[in-house]
Image (cartoon, rainbow, N blue to C red; front, side):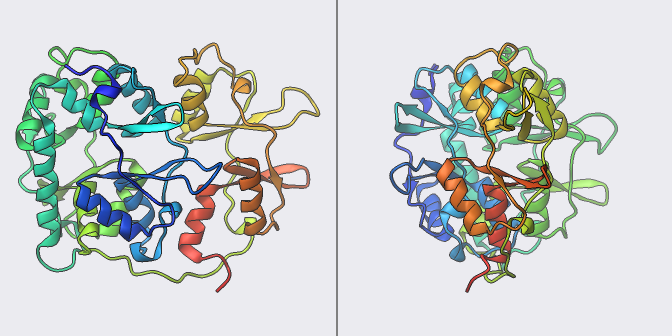
Length: 419
């Protein structure tokens, strides 16, 4: 059995320029049969990024945007979450679970050697090869996406019938059923008729593998996700994508008259976008000019002495990825800590989250701007400092924050404010 990230990674990773269009990235992903693509650094001092089908779903389909009119740099994520080639599968799975991601880059120094996905880990756990089933699943999604007229509602793309698993089956038995049929989820009946939960490949990775549990002993009922979220057949593709993005899920069963009649996944929607069966309609948007147009409310704040473990618990409780850090003493500067900081500076370096204070890894001092600051100046200050978030100050108080994501999303929606 292959036991390290270097053993199971996909190498070399397929890559693309940051200036390419999202449509070009889609074509490359389709031709290579992949669901993520590495983004090459734009120049000296730049970092690698990554674009996944979830990014396409959340940043293109949700906003009804045309992939031909967007650049890869507008939807990519950076920095990469990375592991070393010698990392074990349990350690790699735990990092994925903590960062809430499905793939990591395998690096040696500054070189990206390959990519490890949750599917690669899933494959390595069983002697049977998942790759053939994965190809079958993607080909099936593409056939559905390419057939018929334009896709507008979920019933145009859904899979039916939906496969199931018994609640008392072992996780190992469930995995074999997934492999046999080339699927990455199974419905589980949890009680009275039509009461269901769902078990996914990610449930197995995060709740079993990442915690070092025995797949032969853990029962399906102990790892399923309940309650089951569903949508009706007439739900639009865009609305379904919004649900997936907001709830951080990859699939939704389709309910009609109290019964599950099918299931739709992000793979199905992604295949429809690849096949140009779904097209975003918007290219030109209203304009915006200043920080006040895009800023969000300030994140929750914590003390610099707070343990990283406690900060992680707060992030989880309030479903946030950023926390402001209060000055330890009068006259000192505010700081900020993000989930990426925790992953890259604590978990990836095997530091103890209970013994490491937030002040040891926070970014400080914060960049402060006024609400009237132009977006041009704001982005220039971000680029110059290497920080991806600025605080908005008025009257000596922090009244909001602006992140790179806020600016990118606003530009996608409304443009730069110039023709």
